[in-house]
Image: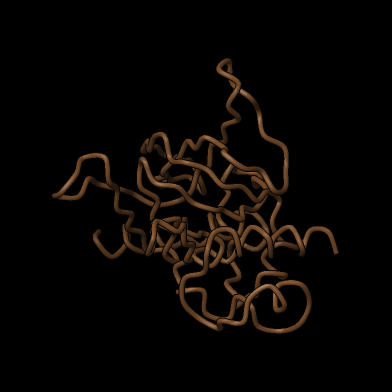
Length: 202
């Protein structure tokens, strides 16, 4: 019985990946230009809430996590403004979460699928997201490659880094390569924003 349940879970998980937005299932190493081209939306936002849920796929159910973010800076895509005038966006991904020991507002995801980015309430991110698929699921392009955490560096300079430590982000040619010379490690948010705009305007 346990083996049957495990096989059923993996079958449903595989189906979920196949029906997820284009680009979510195939995880390729991408530079900034490729992330920009493949993204349906690019924005900087603060995570306002995290809610668990479920989705029915293949005769079974899989756990999901829905993030609600306030959009503080929009680079690409359309965003719905709420009554207070601040645009917001919801992103539903496969996975589960639980509070960490240090703070009930912080979250940690776990999944048998390729690891999805970990977003925490109250923190800011630059996200390159796919368009919602038929199931309503969406994700950062290239999973952790398309999720940049914003944090304060030296002299309170805002820095941005994705879950690959920006490895390969500025490889290749074009505006992204000219915008930064570092091949790995955090870059300033201003530098990242400038490079994104350069890619969009070329």
